[in-house]
Image (cartoon, rainbow, N blue to C red):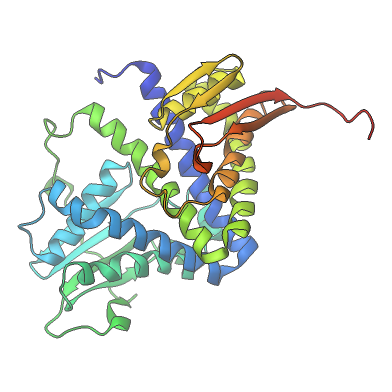
Length: 347
């Protein structure tokens, strides 16, 4: 049992749900609005950014520094995704060859979205991360061989890390061999994390952070690939729709119905300090984007605003959400104002 207060658990669950669905929605929106090539470029950039930020520190955190490179890579994917609630298995075949399999349902292509994800977008994920592990490990012989993708109608995304005898050219760091298949999985042999090092409270934060990290990284990548204003439009429109679609579930998880209560709970669940100031809400940090101040543009929050608006609109269809002050513009806080919009009385 977790010793966390129920409101913290509920907040983590709600923000994890919203950001998870937002991520899937953004990938679909990119395919529809920007095309497969641009969507694939964003997904590749997203996973490369995630890898460069998380992979090497994660090897140490998960106790994998003494493993061979191929085994360490595969075991990293198993453990890190398992912590985030993603179904992955790991099968070491030798010191130089180790399999991973992401079993359906695919977390990133949630629900029926799997039917609309082009193969190129799924491959972009592998080019962004799996093909680059050898580069970060200074092992030019290490590559990844994909033997199946769920988006191609095969029973899972699977493949293996392999250390070859010769150095691999860049184009061969990722290869596709659909004639091979993952060996049977012995679930009793899968590694288990030490529960004393990973207590329930820590695991709750990891699950929340798993979803948050994807949004933290996809927003700047979209801005780079599409330009800030185009990215803002997709972020905003998609956020409105995803927020509305999951508003009721969010309210039920939080056990809250008042718009300002819901917004405050979601902001606090991200790890931000909030305070009621009259009928307004002060947010004095932005943990989601902490450390990215040098590259942040106003369009990031302008786009993300749509998600919060979307959550509030089904509660009160005339709700209007405004920012009276903005931390991302050098002011001391984000000051949120929720008001009721009316009809124009004349111009």
